[in-house]
Length: 209
Image 1 (cartoon, one colour):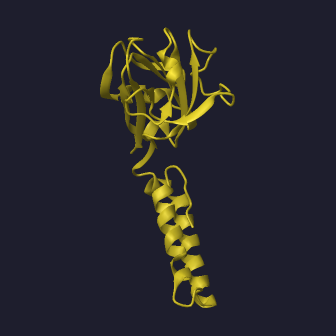
Image 2: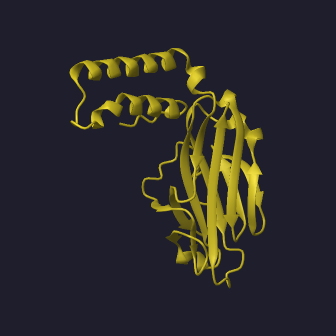
Image 3: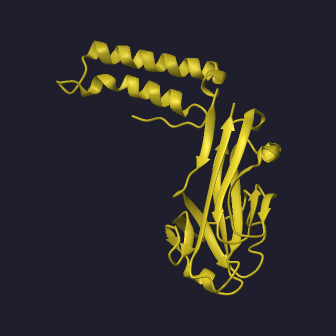
């Protein structure tokens, strides 16, 4: 049994694993008394965490890793209105794991249409934050063979005009975060349409202290 809760995930997963530990013994099931005891321990841990959220939130993090599934859209131009805002409906967009690209580069979602002059790829991914006031670090890592612009909740946080492989500290934009759902949106395009290959791999890590 796994209980995943942003900010309390690790503590709750430990509690859930402990509560279920007796269910895989040699006879397959714990005794009624032992099962009741484990349930009481699990319930007590949950109550303690709920009553003292600082214990669980001491070092929580949200991560968008390489290979995460993004919503993406290909277009020549500026993209749909407010495409980089949290309330935008991207249900009609394509879905695919990062990175994105064509040719012999490092990618998991092939987008050959990027070879066309002026075509951009617009990508979006949501992430959760418990308490923006407790955020201590926001690191945006991007591997891109072309220029890109990154937005967080519609606010531009970084712009590159050339090929880049870089980790960017954007902690200064923590005040733009919302409690709960947030959006990281990035637009990028091939700088040279004669390129034989192209790769674009975005990653994000947010740490709450």
